[in-house]
Length: 231
DNA sequence: GCGACAG
DNA sequence: ATCTTGTCGC
Image 1: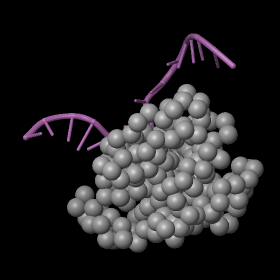
Image 2: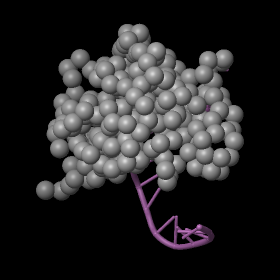
Image 3: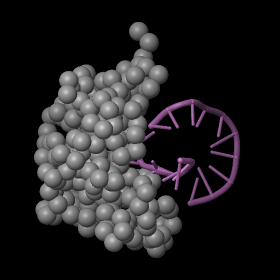
């Protein structure tokens, strides 16, 4: 496990953070289809917090996209870099997530984030931000809708309904299990929305949430426990 | 002006 | 995110 320092130039205020998003938003690539589902590597990233001790732990877990077997894992621990502010989640998670990705012994392939990409007030959520910073293809799979309108998808697994910002489709509600609450998929960087949904379905053979985020969630929690362990 | 609001 | 026991069901 590696330890991270918050960059000197990291935003300290809501205004500064929003300015960073506005500056980087133009670098998002939306016209690539992205890697085909079921091939290469798929990497889940997730973060756990201990606000009491000002600790944050991130995990990156690389899966073989065809078999969903774990290929590699890495974790990183650091100080909390930003308070939770809706719309600015990336500033709370990214330094530690980047460190975990850097510590991987192999290329991550497609990165699956816990949160949103395009489905964001300024169209620049966590998945978009991470994609622009790394150049990697990224998607966001969130457990809850943000403030976007959406219809209830049909009951069968695989059904979708658009996440709408006015008339613009910024993501999709995707049913990954029959009759179970959908997940909310949006594009991050260098991946198309249809392909992002196909990847999400390929990653949910048994549970509502993708295997990538399930693995990363378990690992970052373990890393946090380890980091806040009494010596 | 008052809520709502990814994790 | 996190605080938290048991309980219903496959």
